[in-house]
Image 1 (cartoon, rainbow, N blue to C red):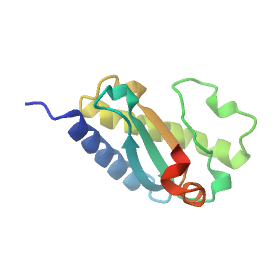
Image 2: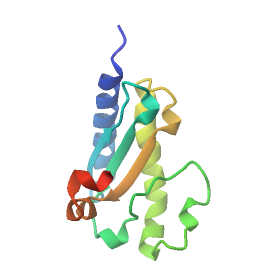
Image 3: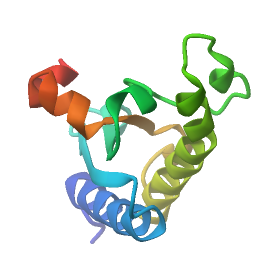
Image 4: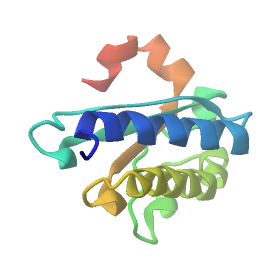
Length: 128
């Protein structure tokens, strides 16, 4: 019997968090996901909470698979320096979902933000 969609989500997130924490120990605070995946897996959103000064980390950053996302002039120099790492981390997360047989894994929404910023602005309610 195939694992449930919830089991696959849990497995992929645990794997992603483990890989990211070992690969980027100074950057990764946590990884979690939510969404109405029982309705459709495309509703999943994965968040990677980053350690560091909030002003150095892009807010609510969702790197697309496109080439110009990093050129946003509103980003600070420190934020722009972090973009290639964020893009690489998003790829790792999507690979973990691919490895568990997630439908359309290459299009999983992966967001990044500062753990400190999220806590400062209400924790879970920050994402609403």
